[in-house]
Image 1 (cartoon, rainbow, N blue to C red):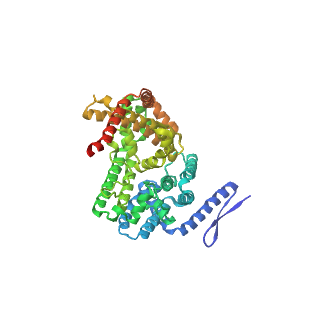
Image 2: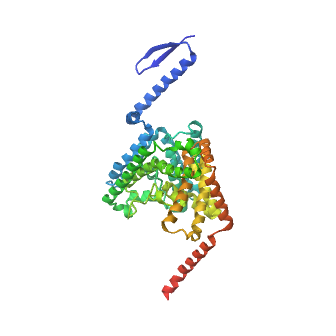
Length: 495
């Protein structure tokens, strides 16, 4: 039975070929059908179709995925958009400028996936308006149900992919959703804003795609030009923008020059697998620095856009909202390093998760719960849960070491700093490389090649400090002595 294949055009049907195979006919027909639908959609969104064509051409020229090029373009576009925003003084116009530019950039980057973030945000607004003080848990369940569903879909159909499919954008959007419901419940937002102002906050253009996250009150003060936002110094703002733009360029250069010669693939090479443990430790410390180039590039570009808008101005500097801590690479304490990594999300986790469960569960359990939520927020890949549990143990161990710091007084000056920096950085890189590998088998092989030695050391130290309380007794005495002095000092002043 022969089948006639027809190709649809705008004005006519043209005979193009005859096939004997039924399967071929339906396959090719489906391809043409998709072309028709694609053309129809392109007509509806001509500006986005035009931009897509440009990004696809650039992608073909430079060999970088077009979705990544779109995100970089968005970061760079937010710099002039931010300076323009500074000249708008009407509160309504400032909010609408934020909302419309944010929606435009979001649709450009993630297309129809933006509807998911929009629907989730509107549902958050409705739930919060209706339930108010009882809204945080329903909002948390609703937003994380949507997010985890997308994570599961990605894990099934694109487990090792890094393409911008809307999941990454939603991750930061739900941070704002949960911020909003939490602040309403706490009374930190005294009056629920109108829907447009709320959506302006959610889609604030420098943070609409992949953050950073921040609470609604900061946005409201910024839009209303309250307090220090009434007079944002243009010169200092420009310097702050150029500083982070320059740091982004420096990280791009490092990524281009070093990464091709020393990449994540080294952990699969024979010299690493069969090398001695000390060589492996030195290698992962260097590899950790190299791998962080791309993250620092992203955060510095995002920070430049945030600074250009002026929302990061604190009245003294432009550090009110930070994507990452500037001292990350030189900080010896792993716990403080953690706080400096993706800083806005760390603040969100502390404000909306850790502080909320702390009164009921205590420090250790609350920290564990926070890391589990953080792992779930990142995705459903099994390696996240292994490494984030590990990270919780590492944070506790670093606190134990801090409390017992007097026991290490024999380590003096620069030597003390170098030893603790090396140990802390090794622990961070050891776990971070597993996250970058993402694949459970590859990550497990990496840890096996190091015989899980850093894991065993940290678990041993955790159990040792927890059972012996070594060094913590003196710390408690010092704290109580300080508190006694503080309570007695007012009376002395009165006398």
